[in-house]
Length: 116
Length: 110
Image 1 (cartoon, rainbow over the protein chains, first blue to last red):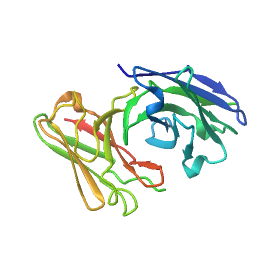
Image 2 (image 1 turned 90 degrees about the vertical axis):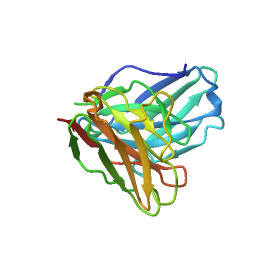
Image 3 (image 1 turned 120 degrees about the vertical axis):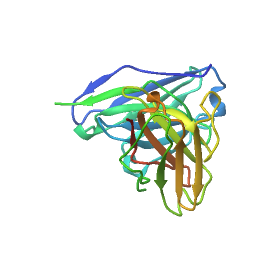
Image 4 (image 1 turned 90 degrees about the horizontal axis):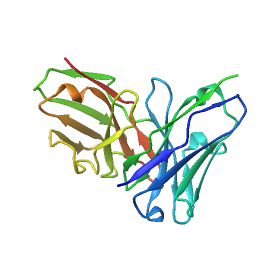
């Protein structure tokens, strides 16, 4: 069965960076793309970007360009999302979600708290 | 890229039907048959309920159905049950490998 298991909660100071991981299993890793989606407390879902797990190509939402980097390690079937220059507004739960022209499987979410 | 427009809240009694709308533009909802709907219970990850406008993944109740007309997609839940109370989000492909979500709708089962 498809599983996406994310890394644990993080607390970061403003200006720092955070790197969240998402380990996939139960399917052929490189046959799909992976999205990252975030959700601030009490708010809706926000699409951040997508990575091609075969070639590594990325597309980021305009809002995050210059601050977000998505990478993957095919040897461990793990996807990473790094967000830099963190500010309080980046406090949110970050999800990875497998792409099949939709978001068919989701990770459990990783809470990132940005606080001085 | 602006978020798709959903009503903030809808409500219905058990057994009734409700419809949640999702309005986009000619650049997203109207141009692609790639609208999907997600159910999210508090503290949980979203769950795919409808994809490609009207298709249901395996395991999703046939009480959930989707449709689209022009730049507006809709999710209909028939025979409302208490367990349907949750937040619902629409999402559309917006071209150039980008995606956009709606603001979410809180469904209350009275």
